[in-house]
Image (cartoon, rainbow over all chains, first blue to last red; front, side, top):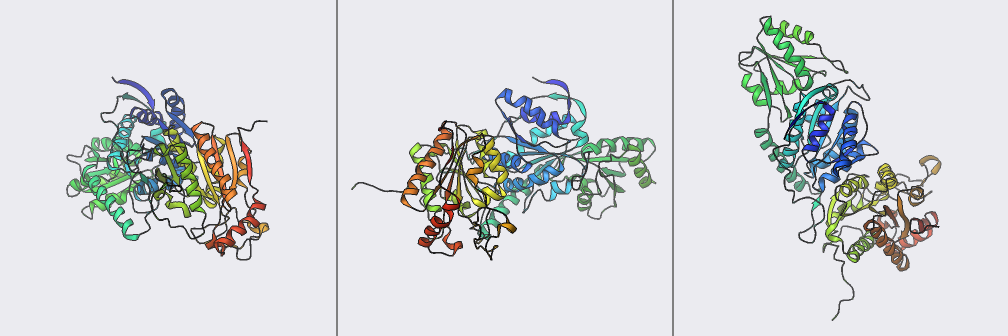
Length: 350
Length: 248
């Protein structure tokens, strides 16, 4: 049974998690993601779940660590400055192979920054969501409907690979309202024989731990995890291709920015410039294969971001010198106008 | 031949890494005895903290989670809220509980989180080699207070049980010591009560155990016990600071 409703992006993040069987939420207020917590605080007590407001983002993410280590689906949500605090527990979860979902509804930075939409946490999400050698799955929805779909996918893949997963949204997506179809996810939670929830006198004790004082032992653990990462890179890359068949200019953009880019691409075509859009849906693993597919076909790539240029580095890595890679971005919470992006495309198409 | 003394079942049959004379071994045993007495090992989840007791996950036979520094009560909260049927305890040192984890300690206590906290106060950071702890005594020499703790400069020690006893969510706040047989017997009773409170859903229970660190105090095990008696107990008086069963 499915129903179509009008929903805010932040509410969809929450409802999707509930539909996916996540009825434990640990949060701390921060703009522009507060509706996630507000929605959870209203819904979860009615369905036997737990909404708990923590004393800090540090505590919230460590509550998530405890809940997830005990084998249930759980999540936390925050925005940029709060995510910095959550990285402590995220590193521990990665280091002890605990799957969980973390949501970042990005705002401008650095520091307290601003509360307007931003994509300036790309490096943090894809390079270093905490200390140590590790990665988390990063999904970047661009519509409210896709928020629902990717929350389901994020829980499922996090459990399959035993890694934390992040939904990297932004303030625009979090605050916008769009119709969504709410459907139960196709997959159910994975078995978790490793969980610490009491051995019930039927098995040896489970230990959830990230400490290995012998260097070789720690190295082995990390290397094993990187083998899983290789499998993830091979199987989980996702990207949407928009008007790419005959494209000469490939504009790469994710999340809310991709919506602006698509409008600009369409307009460019009406003005005679063959532009197309590659929209990464997974940011880690980065959809390198999609970029590689087009690197010898297009004249150039253009990465458009709400940042000073972060994802553009992944585009360059994938293009590997085969074509020029340009960048256009606005930052600090400024949302690029389609016209600005169009001007840049037209300039490149000349 | 009848067995009159044996290892508690809730302790694993492994060697520990603790220094000679360290009282972690005694307190581990008391916790394990409480778990055995209440018959709850199969439903218990222990939260190891960062410090000398970090590897307690290898010593307790129940399921164990190792928490980031100071966050054991938050991790315990996550487990307990997800599995109210589980018995959840944290085992934390003074740096972990009363410095970096103060917020988690105070807020899990004031929420009345239905967990059991075992707090080892030995007035020093043990694992990193003997630095000033939040509970280091005035004048006490440590690696980072080489001229003795000057409270006008480094601040004052925290009396955790006294502080937490002011909070409504606390069911039990009791300070005991691991320095002598009578004190250890008292400690055992307190720890059993702290676990029982949780099973009876009474809320947050903390047992602070004054403990020794002969290695970093630079004393023999016997001298360390005496130092605890002479210096710690006067500053940190033993006793029950809050017990919701004692309603006057």
